[in-house]
Image (cartoon, rainbow over all chains, first blue to last red):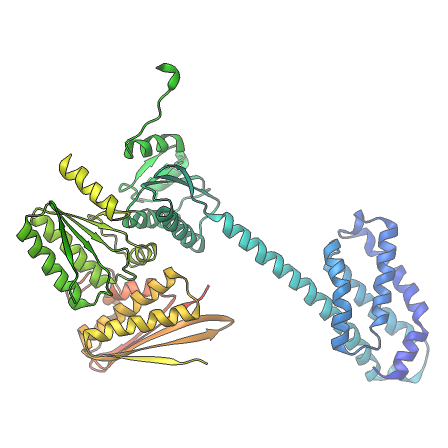
Length: 275
Length: 118
Length: 133
């Protein structure tokens, strides 16, 4: 930044800070900031404006470094991004206005505006990129968590496993379900797998197609599938859509399916009390 | 290359351990049928545990072996189909619907015994 | 470095060679076992088509990258008789050779991108790509 511009900015620092703190106070009653106590809000504002002035004489690489420590803290504390962007925008406005009022000649220079613009833009870029980076991380880790939860295969008896499916099934998830299912069958030496679709909200042709494919693949590796948890509305849609589930055994509940699975593996549940 | 076929009582046991090319798979078809004829076998277990890929041609020949053996009075069970192979076949729309399957050689044999000896 | 591997298909051994090369590259790129099987099977189908219908041609495989994604491209090309009716060969169960009729539609389902270009008496080129997830 041009030394003379920098100088006059620093000269007017107190004035700018004061105006800005006043201005930012108005945001307080909007947005998500209402739950923050007055003292925390004030001290954060104060720190923010100090940070901004710290970057006056840094080159852009150093700005990123300096800002990222600060933004990390803001992100952790959950300060919204628009507090940052609006704060910086009004800071820019106030700075330009304040300096214009001094009446010095350079204020009418286009270079003067450019200097201030690029200074503040740099800050906005650094902060936004930190924020979006942290969001991407969050999305990624949630995606991974969802993937892990997506299709567990639970061995319940020797040779019998259950796979409860919960939530919407898209083709990406269907692939995962299929792979987990088959690997699990081999690993657990399962003869029968019960696929429980109680938690699947909608069974359309696409979902049915994925389930049928999974059942066929299970048969190829040498086990049998029983589809359980068929609610009345699912039975209705399946028949209305003309989906043929005739090749598979289906049961309304997991309990009934389990009885069938035990029978298929030559076992049954006996009530000891009745003996 | 020839795939070895073992005889065990009334059954034939085959474990495919080689990369299947078209020639080998056709030779295999012929060998199995001859062996069934020779030994009067009632059941055949074909283990595919080591097979990493089955394309539509190999699937067709295997399906044919099952149908042909059936004509000659022998029931065939395919065992040990790998998950990746199963998924690939299903992707291609090949379900081998009428073919009996089991997890491994042992369970394949048990399946045959149960069905043939009651 | 991205290397393109070409395998000539003029005998049944070419089919085996092409799919072995395909599996090796798929593994190197980092595909999981299921996608390795999908790619290898697709190559096998494409190579067999060349052998059955055109007698000779080639399969080329290479790593590709686009829009931040990595993938594997498989190109099958021959100067054979070409395909008269591209639409019907893409139908399940259509066969002129007594096979299952799962070949080309199967390849399309096994891979992510699939493009077929065929001129009668000129030959056929099929370009397919599987993307790494």
